Image (tube, rainbow, N blue to C red; front, top):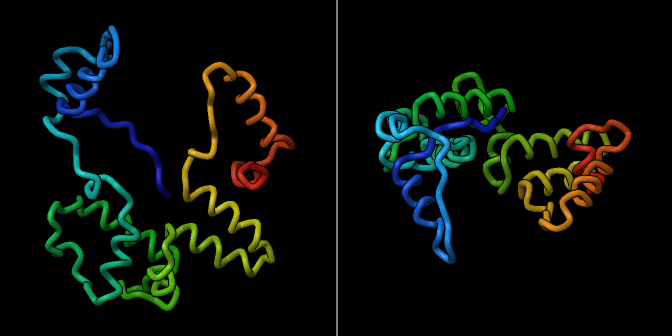
Length: 180
């Protein structure tokens, strides 16, 4: 299961953000950390994306041509081994890998499908429960993130109320997205 992790920004990122304040007009930068934290706790540079992202699609892509030893694969910026192990565990749980870490028939189909493996598995399972059309709509919304919601500053209250209407009837997030 993916989750958002709160992590400190880097010194380079903090400097870039400070440089943006006042760029187009008078501005100030307020940092919510101390100078001590800046000098002692923040990394100099931001961690590269391959080192902090879900690697399930990367693992599928590498497994297809027969690369099995992912821990020793020559990545330009190697991801943490824990991230690779999490991806392997997820793919095993989704039946994309067998007990020895080889791609299954489902795993090969996942690799060919340009979608997050969890969403692919959701679509495949939905056919069994006769709700394929609805699940495809939900998967489409989930695959693009929160960019479907527009928040004009002058109508924030109206936007929040309209958004609550999608949750009417005490439905979960996926059904609310289907209503959207």
